[in-house]
Image (cartoon, rainbow, N blue to C red; front, side):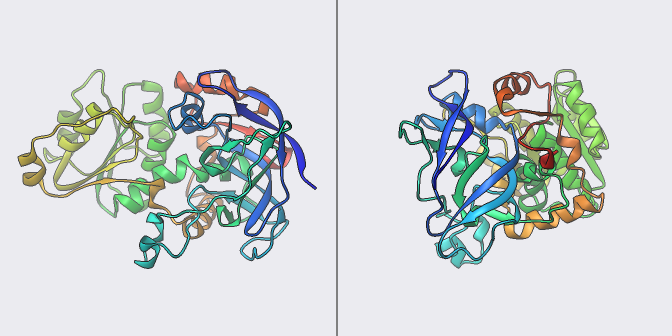
Length: 366
């Protein structure tokens, strides 16, 4: 029987979200229903509400989540009822040209549930990033479920579903940070600080945090940044070069997604260094750089999709590191809130007051 649960819905562009009844169907072939225990409030959810992703309203928001599988559909073998899982929005197909090349983290045909969740009047909902986890239950493709150690609290584990994985992966997977590297991270919100934590874990010798907010720079020190640069008070490129012997950083992670900060990243890297763009720009933004500089400086200019992660590989590994005390997921949780507090969490996020507000739906998620 379908389930009627409470969920957070954005009905129109810019309108406050509302907590309302959502109908979750029984899982069909390849699908799973998950009892959501916790879900982080991510900037992407706010982008959906503001119409910055597409105009397929109404949206069922939330995607950075963990919970317990309650039901599975026909043919599902990777998870079973009772499994503790982190949800991901890039469930690889295994058959597209990227998967066939052995690079499934670039999968061009990722899976979502075939059925739609609805309002009680039958209006179909568009789940954020194919997940829709600001709800007591959600319907996803089984490939969007990654089984991990159930001893990890859901409030921390769920953050791997988006922002923390994106930042960690930008440094480690896309940027290839290794022992002894110098790293600069521009933008020290949740994604940027995850990049800092990843660079530290990978053995970087120098990790330079760059932001215009001293609060965020203090958070960055907590995640292992060795130096901080306030972009309002100092020339970012000059200061990063000064801190790296005049050369620039081996890897620069741009976690803002703006032309001016991307240009800073480009010039703050060493010759043959790497720039990784993980901050999400808007469609109208453009960057103009001298082509001779792109040629002459060598190295690599990369973008990072979801931290170029493979959930089946990376989520369990990072949970293990967390359980060993080597990766501080708890440090990203600024507060825990209820489903009815998502709108106020958007305001705090917009003002830079939190790294992550996390919606907790039951005590097991805390």
